[in-house]
Length: 458
Ligand SMILES: *[C@@H]1O[C@H](CO)[C@@H](O)[C@H](O)[C@H]1NC(C)=O
Ligand SMILES: *[C@@H]1O[C@H](CO)[C@@H](O)[C@H](O)[C@H]1NC(C)=O
Ligand SMILES: *[C@@H]1O[C@H](CO)[C@@H](O)[C@H](O)[C@H]1NC(C)=O
Ligand SMILES: *[C@@H]1O[C@H](CO)[C@@H](O)[C@H](O)[C@H]1NC(C)=O
Image (cartoon, rainbow, N blue to C red; front, side):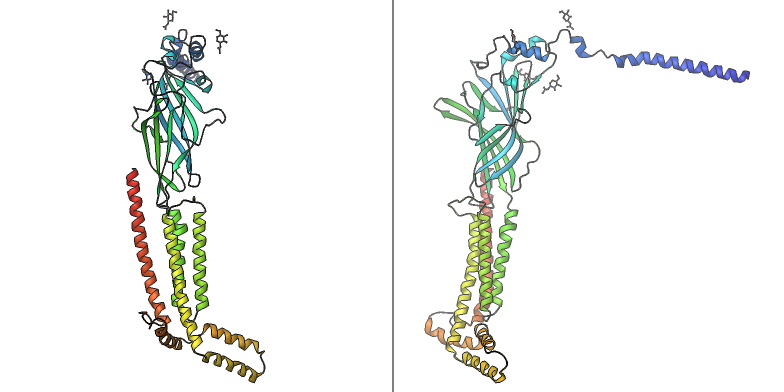
């Protein structure tokens, strides 16, 4: 018992001493964490709050928003664009639409508040304060539509620095013009541009500049993905333009877009290849299958016309020849020529039918046979007969007839001794060869022209 009570005493003592130690430690460190002597607290009695600064700056101090800051030397406005998204490029209406942040920075000495011992190094404010300040009144002078996003409130950011520097940031949706040259369509590149300038002040009063401290004053906030274009290049330049009221500084931004032609290749070129290939099947069907060949040729022609119409529907009615026009019309003429070839074959075969009066004799035999049987109605053998008459000309005789008559018709024609089968065989080689040549010429011309134009614009 005594040992046990001694041990109890010892543990009690230990726990007391430990608790005291912890308490002591808490006293040493815990208080520091609970009441840190903060920086602001030390200065609080003497620093000025944001609202007081704004009141002092704008209420009753003689700030005039109509007075240009630094009237003798003019104001430098540094501009920067951040491209957020490019939403569309439209060939029909010849424009593009994008969301951008416009940044403008200038120095307004009237707004300096260093002497007021501000609590913060900068003031973040909104459009209500901006309405009371002088602004360069800059705008896009060539935009079709431009509006500041206003949901849920006007997307305007304003920051004031103690030395009087004003930084304004607007989030704007702007629709600007493009100069569409579709002569290389769909292997084309397009430029779209905007011009930003002060509307009211000439360059004696307001000097607009691309932000000199940033080598790329116009840049994208992330990758810009458009379904049918790639953004190749952004260029920003300053131009000085004379107006009746003086010289104005214009900030030009040009965007160079290259078309993603894969879609057009899949939707226009590949089907055209298939249609043209199918029209060549006709050459291997033989001279007897005139209706089948006619159907094939006419269907191929209709198919290519329909494709052409589908592509053209989404393009403006320009008065010059586009690359896709050359392609489609070239493909159409190949199909048209294959139909012409069919016309020649058909003529030769019909010729044969006119010379030889024997096939009708052959036909007359059948009804007699039918009458002998006296079972079937006379109309159906007659039908068979006319069908045979139309489709089953004996080729050998036809060739003979061709060689006899052609000498009478075209005595100087070098191919006059050709049979329809020979013509078909010749065409089944000549058409693909010509088409291959057309392909080589087409692609080498338009690809080199597209490369030259892109190089010129870069
Ligand atoms: C605050 O201002 C008072 C005089 O108004 C001055 O005595 C005091 O030193 C100032 N405090 C600081 C931290 O500047
Ligand atoms: C501006 O100051 C006047 C008094 O000088 C005051 O009556 C008015 O409410 C102030 N306006 C604002 C917006 O603070
Ligand atoms: C604004 O001031 C705060 C401190 O008050 C600072 O942390 C911040 O970086 C400043 N912002 C700019 C853009 O200068
Ligand atoms: C004003 O202050 C800002 C931020 O501290 C600085 O970037 C700018 O260069 C200053 N401007 C002048 C004219 O001192």
